[in-house]
Image (cartoon, rainbow, N blue to C red; front, side, top):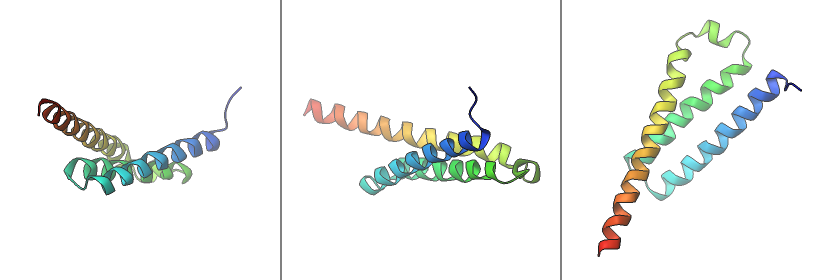
Length: 96
């Protein structure tokens, strides 16, 4: 059984939008550098995913082949930075 390409792309966009929504909630709770990076990176990734629906989108915009993974990397750095900051804060409060 194979999934049609447009359906697979749609599932990818929906998942990206859900993660983007989670980033917005995280940013609303902690308006610091790390959640801001995660939000910006995920926004770039979602926009790049939407280009999958444009016929020959990546052929017309080859720079997206670089922008997309950089956006995902920025998202990962932001999320990891926030997780590390929260971990350190929890360790400090546990010692007090």
